[in-house]
Length: 235
Image (cartoon, rainbow, N blue to C red; front, side):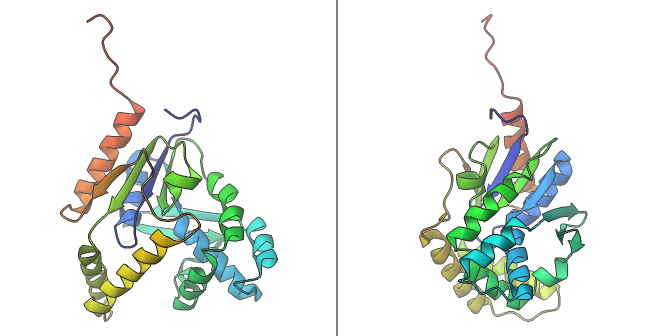
């Protein structure tokens, strides 16, 4: 059990593994706060674009991060609202231009270091569910429960393809698969906070699991860590 009185569930894993959906549902079931760490980087990218800060302007990015007030709010229906300085910017941070800019600044050491305090500030009672790529390895190393959610690249591409179709959008399955493989290689091979399971994380392959099954498995792990079975000393 962590020495910090506020329990934390970290959900790390590659793109398309379902961390967001699992995270919002777990937060709802537990009644805990929710941190979409990926959205923080998109929020920084959005502000940087708005303020004309270049991806290689470390000092400008440092100042931006210091003044950023961020909040992600999970809502029914697997919806997450993103607030920056008390303004709802959910639609703005999801844009393609912001996505491209995010990929350019997310690996900047100055950005990752500056956002550590902001992310850790989300740790409030009764608890926190945090999803991302380095939540258990860097941000919340003393988390109560750490889970690394993964699935095969083929399955993740199929899931993304279905999401696009359900929204009435076009998608190329082969292109999606290649993009996922490239993203995996980039995230796993980067020098700063590479994508990998924490040493004390439970690795959960969801390739053949439904969302409900994943949520149930994760909540079982949380319950085991919050209420460990103690040996009967009388035996």
